[in-house]
Amino acid sequence: MKNKFLIITSVLIIAVACFVFFQKSIDKTLIGPSNNSSPTKLEQNSYSKNPLKIILLIGDGMGINHTQIGRITMGGSEFNMAVDRMPIQGTVINHSYNSLNIDSAASATAWATGTSTINRFVGVDPAQRSVPNISEVLEEHGFLSGLVATSSITHATPAAHYAHVGSRYEEEEIASQLVNSNIHIALGGGKEFFNLDDSKDATFFFDLDKIPGAAFKTGRVIGLFAEDGINRGEGPSQLEMTKVALDYLHQDSPCSKFFLMSEGSQIDWASHDNDLKAMLIELEDFNATVNTVLDYASQRDDVLVVVSSDHETGGLTVLGQKDDFVYSRWNTDKHSLNQIGIYAYGPGAEAFAGKMDQTEIFTKLTSLANKETCTIN
Image (cartoon, rainbow, N blue to C red; front, side, top):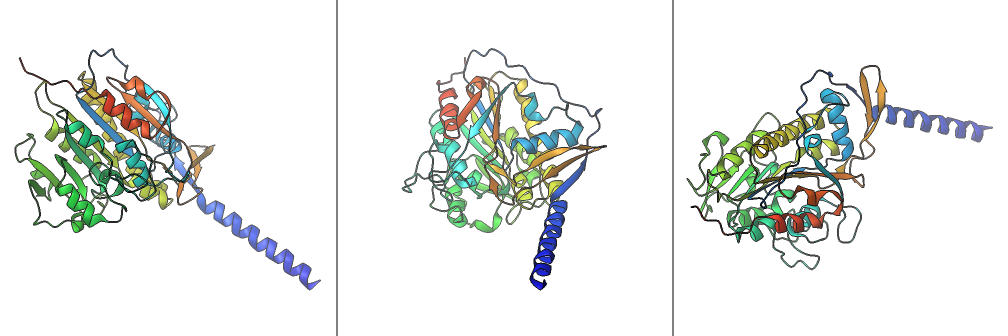
């Protein structure tokens, strides 16, 4: 009898614990007003030449359900997120060399170099041999390169565009490689990882407003606005940094070529924390950044814009509606195998329709880039 009582008590305790756990893991968020101004969708035009400017925007940890709940909370189910404006859409298969699970280092290496590698590796293959990245390949064809991140600029995603190391955690070595790289402008956090006396031909800036707009005015620029990642409200946003990078790279010349990667790094961090409110703040910044880039591209015929993610974080599930609220649940505090998307607009965007492996992003971007020698009449 005593054993039976203990069993029943144990079952009840487990049941209550599960109930409390799942109650805590469910988020209740107000549905956005349907009269919120929704940006119009863009149409894919016919383009006569390959792009002279390529902009890759990465929502770190952003799965399709992140976009879905962002859409609902910003303006309801009919609201257009920035990616909804983009006429070409597809899905990305992401995995590391030896696992279905992938981290940001292996993921960024995949799209930056076209090489599937081991988690934690940056810019190297599984045998730790350096492989050329987009910035290095496109430099040969007259492209300048820029990077933006709300994390440290030495973090895994931006690092894959200039560094070649066996571990993403070698951030002092990664910082040294950035200083010695071909990146024309790099903006983010990570001041603690740099030897500020070792600037080579780059100029360090610690105030975004001090960076000049005209390209080549001061040569290469490294902007460091926090010791590590940039805390929200204590440094520039992704939108603010991306505007400066665009202004710095853009030249009023028919020969102006550049590649820019801008990452909303902390969508991932908030998702690891299962903090929906913080995630939505980061997602709004990312969404505003993509909209600004699309507005820039829509005024030109030489800009290809691609938006994607490295992986999904948090296993986010959007459960349903009750009254004026949408309910969602985090299922893990780690990376998941949930689907990620890819979205494109501009010359060559059609190449990103349908299903593709993450390594194909590198192949498509480098093959689409306008490699013609440009002359001004």
